Length: 384
Image (tube, helix red, strand yellow):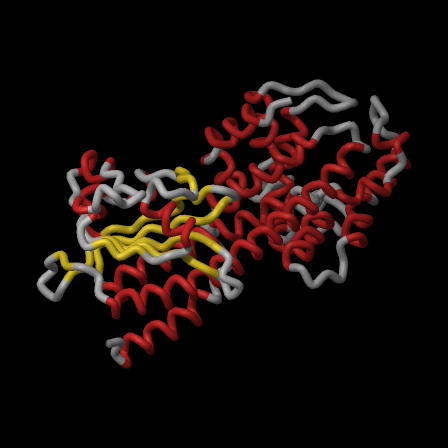
């Protein structure tokens, strides 16, 4: 019999899960709450992927005490949706499997228990409740598996019919939340790819490659995290920084692709790419595009106020503009251009250091130099 408190917890969990937009965080939340609500040692989640289910995450209170963070140990693997494994069978038949002791499965059952983890990590799996996660149309989303039900004395016992009822509700709300998060993630990835491809399009006219775009994004994201910001914010910075030169779409080829120095008039036209980029990206409701506009407008401003287009000085320059000002110059100096060869890294660093307090924000430059080993790893990875 489900108690009123359990119902309350399940309802609140359903509401909470609906707010998660990141699949990884959602799956961890489901696994942890499953252990709590089912009073069991562990929970594992598989997600349907074509004709197989992919193992995504496991949480286990006993193994974590012994091994630490399980995410560093158990990697993604796949199982066929077939009779062979317990999870595969539950996925194939869309049926619940409540097994009191996995080592006592009858030989005439089509599925069997694979004890690799028990053997390797000296763990003992006994009771197991495995449930298909089905959406509102009864389509398979994945499999939710509960391991080793415990009583109040932490002794292992079988999962009850009441546990099955709770598990069915858990698997149902989890399926809906996972579908929504997966769709949101797909939209996010598509959105980011669109932004990236637009940025690449602007660079192709400048005879630069998509590797330049990738390096700027990676450099800027790394530097943003080094400055104490979150990984989520750093991801937005990665894509926003890649739009820094979008305004070059409006610059004539004769100037963009000129192999020698620009005249004063040509330089003035070239500098307009910041204003063109700002105009292209203005009036958006998207936080990413809004940040991209800030980058496009401000990445050629200088700390001492001698930059363009608005001669902003010091902290008048948006923080992301100050970051991309540095990463863009580093990439320009260390890469071949139509008007210059690539400089060696030692020379590049020397030039950049000379611009402390003039072109570059001193604090950001310090952070950049602190992350130089990682910067150089990115440089080598995306080297032209």
